[in-house]
Each structure stands twice: as structure tokens, then as C-alpha cells.
Length: 260
Image (cartoon, rainbow, N blue to C red; front, side):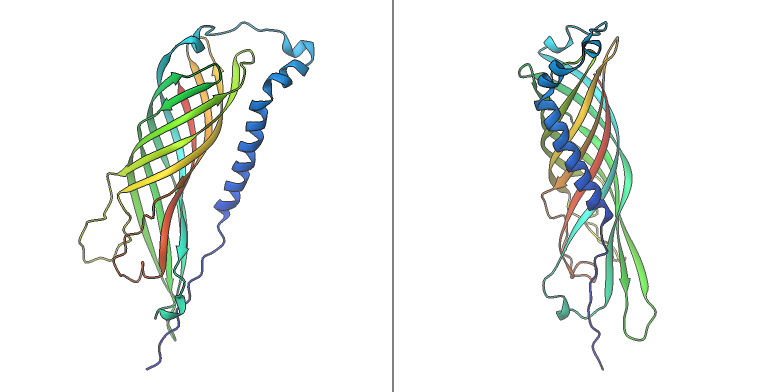
């Protein structure tokens, strides 16, 4: 009896292109923040005219609080095993992302004129999946979609670098790390159905940019951020869905609105 040949193909990930675009945006925004003082000085007079300032004493507070709402797009970065030909199946693996949403509570400590320390514990609802196509000799391809839904308790700590305030707004760059605990994991579940299991804990490093808007009664901020997982989430249970994979790491794009 002839053995089947094992081939694993990862389809091009368009999400990585979006990641590169976001990195370019962050770099440009950082340059704007660092050079904002010079930029303001070079503005034409009509643009430098001061408008009525809102919340003039807001940034003098040692600490303030708020909450955040956000939407996320979560995906998986896949790394395959080195010796694929030694395996005895044929299939294609394609990671697929999905939309979710986030809720958070903001605690912000002023460290200086341009620096803040932010602690934003929250909860996120995340959906991801892996599509497996099995192709054995003389058979029709069979597709399996393994969905992994997670409900993460998030504990992030960020440093925020703000530009000089321009009338009622300012731009900023934010970065730091985050610990995540999946409250919906199936890591320890024993079932007859073969499922793709992911570990309960994850660690990420995050980088983003945003704009603060000083309104009459509160500060509104919009922010885009990328989150890159550091922990290998793969649970190696020696099934056909895990034998070909060396590591699975999370990557998430997040758009947030803050009310502070």
C-alpha cells in the first residue's frame, strides 16, 4: 500500500500587509509627535490663533479615570514544522481572522508634561479559525474549519508619549505589554471530537497611535493599535491538526474609543 505524501501550504496572508501599513503609520505619527513643537511654530498665523480651550486644567491632574470601547480583528501567525515530508497526510492550512470587541477601564497616571502611565484592565471577545484541507490520493479534498473562540481577561500596562497640545487636540504614541487569560479555553477539555486547542495564557507587546480631543466636559480619544503575541498558544495533543504546526501566535488589530 502506497503512502500518501504530506504537503502543507500556507496561503498568502493579506493581514500582514495591513500590519506593514500600520507600522508605517505609527512611524510617521511618532515623527509628528517628536516634531510637533517645530511644526506648530511654522504654522501660518491664522492657524495658530487660539480657540476657546476646553478642560484647561485637565492635564494637571495627577491621576484620572475613564472607560474604553473597541473593535478588534484577530488572526493567527502560523509556523510549520521543518520536516513536513515525514508526515503521512496531504492538506492545506489557512488561518482565518474574525472580528470581535473590547471593553476596558482606564486608569491614567501623569508622569510628566508629555508622558503618562496607563493601566487598562478589560475584557475582549475574540474569534479565530484554522481551515484544513485534506487531500489524500484518489480522493476528493475534505475541508475542516476549526474555530477557536476566546474570552480574554486583559491586564495591560502602557506608556503614552503625547505631543504638545494644539488648541483642543494632541496626538500621541502608546506602547507596552499585556497579559491575557482566556476564560473560554478548551485546553483541558476531553472530547471525542477532534478540536484545535489553544493555551489559556498569552503575553503580547503592543504599539499604537491616537488623537486626544478635549471636549467641553470630557476628553475623547481615538486609537489604533497592533498587538503581537509572544507565547506559543499551540496545545500539542498529537492530532492531525497539530502535528504539522510548530507554533501558533496571536496578532490583533484594535480600534478603540476612550472616554476620560
